[in-house]
Length: 114
Image (tube, rainbow, N blue to C red; front, side):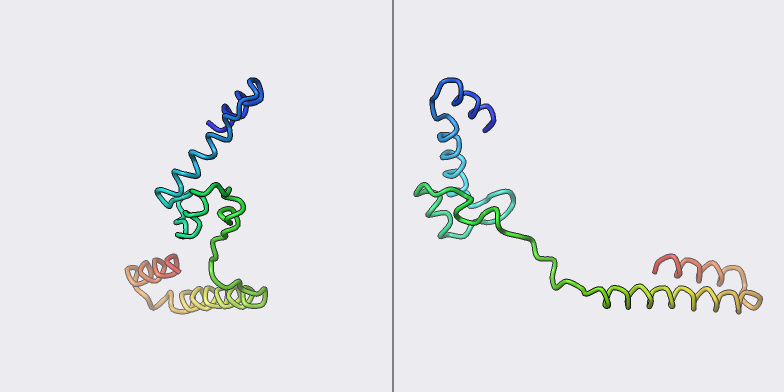
């Protein structure tokens, strides 16, 4: 829709794209939603007053996944997982002769779940 407005504005020299942007800003100011994120009350007031979304920081919001792990923490997790898997495999091999078939299948299922 905005692309068509820019083309019409380029051909006719009529600012259709500004009207589209203003309508979009007023819709966001009224509903408070922009691409799934909730606008703050002060942002809604400034949108209705004519400010653009870029100046109000709508595009600068980043989803924070929590604290980032360092390389050493990631490697510790990888090595712990590898050690755990090797330990389980070795214990299955060592007790394979004494374990009945249903118990062995249960251990294999538990191994696949981790």
